[in-house]
Image (cartoon, rainbow, N blue to C red; front, side, top):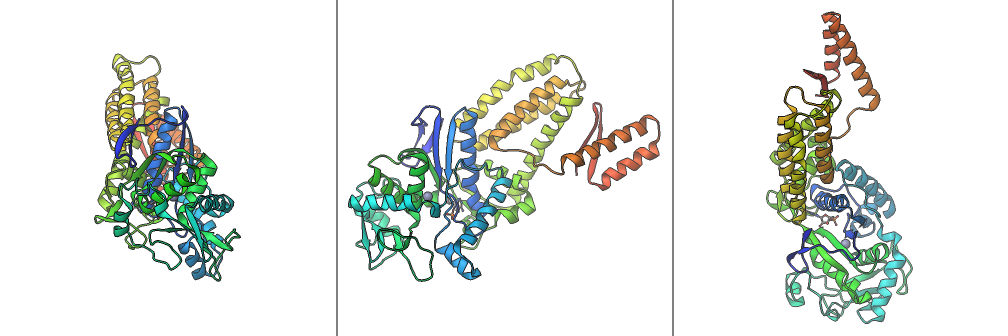
Length: 467
Ligand code: AMP
Ligand code: ZN
């Protein structure tokens, strides 16, 4: 597989540190609100990356943190008159509701900043000892100029970064480009004991600490949105590499922005839609499919039209899946026809084209096109009279395999008990029709219709779906 590495600005062959294993770290949400569609982009796209590695037989350790202490979390807690952990706990729970809806698998570990204070203090201490950091009035700052390679991820020397950055000038800093590793406690704020007195960690240090604790000093892939490249990831590199003396991450992967009216969707601009709200309108699955339809490094515009288009695309895939699922039980018994066997023979070709797209820096847009072409090919064969169960089963397995890699899955509606009731009613209606009791048959059809169940009579029997 080739991935675009922000560090080298090239697509490179992905070679893991340990064969067959991948160590990935992705920056997670700051938990003070529901997350928005822009935040969902890295969550979904790096979930796809992880799923694809797993599909290719790799063992993935995927770490995604929760920033559970920072100014925004504290502000929200103060507004509500509760402690910071009440806010963090609430929005971590809500994260899992939305991420689950979006088909984002839980990471191997979801560590929280406040559960890693010892690890954080340990790295800060090392940086101070090595001369990369200094204490000043209870704060500890990173001495940016001490790290010769600072700027290597953004490909800009320190001077240029300095000119472009909104620098937080502080009387406690030696240099405006220095950044806080540890912040002295302010009255009324949560704090932890440290060698520099009570305080709390700066933002950047938590990722260096959690990556080291859960993945080791050198990891394969570090990912996040492109806005994190500078200063967050640049600072992570400075902290991790200065303290360990080793490379931090071999590959840096960044997704482009999710825009709205060609402007970055962000909480601070106020131009955001939460995933919770958008899912109520379009469905979680349409949001995921919308993301998959673009390459992760291309900007993507959020609009009603694109979400509706995603819904229409999904409907095509779901109805093909429903059809072959039905035929896999109700199709003709016996051997496949020549045309069916040829179609199945061709599945390897679809699989390789799908993998080729994914191997090319996770080109999900092309991978989705391959699925659409496969759907068309399967629909043609499965639409013929006398289609066999054997063919339908093979087609179902093939479609499920590729959809599974992208996390495309029809959400469960209703429950097993309700499904059983519906099937019993359909069976009853079939009996009524056989004994020519059409009144009863129609009554059952109407009853099902009232429950939102649509029946379709096919040569292979009655198919049903929810309207
Ligand atoms: P935050 O909670 O703001 O720290 O962001 C969590 C993740 O969402 C980070 O990886 C950000 O880079 C990413 N992110 C935030 N806004 C956008 C956006 N509009 N488009 C793409 N990614 C974003
Ligand atoms: Zn981070």
